[in-house]
Image (cartoon, rainbow, N blue to C red):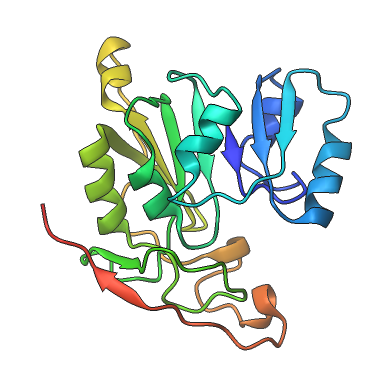
Length: 212
């Protein structure tokens, strides 16, 4: 399952769907992107596409609407900011083995920082969007998930369900700290025009969540 996939060109489950015969769902809310997504997977019988905008208020009702099973393989979230709150709101009855979460590696990894709940997506993103590494770690621990890897771009966190690790006697060796922003794998100090052209960035109000 993956949402916030755009037209499907750069989503996390693309390889699974197009090469490995993955059975799952993609969700995207933008009209133009969704049309392209549907066209891309029109001949993949195991992949279903839905047009939805996910939030902490509707995540569980959308999962019920699409009959998402309580146990499944992968859940990937990419909504450019509210990812923390959506995962927090997701009913614990849903137990994917792997969760891929977008986070903001530019935030202080030693503080549990997260943008305020309920904000709409505002592009281009400024430096305060989303959640810090520490905030995501705390939430993962609460949900029963272990961080096993941070991607090279400093964009995605990979969590595995603790019980899945125990049941399968897994020994996963990944990088779980000290990733700096490397968006597009162009290095930390790339010019803003790489991602945002000449548009001004939008900073988003933040809060520090309680320590656990």
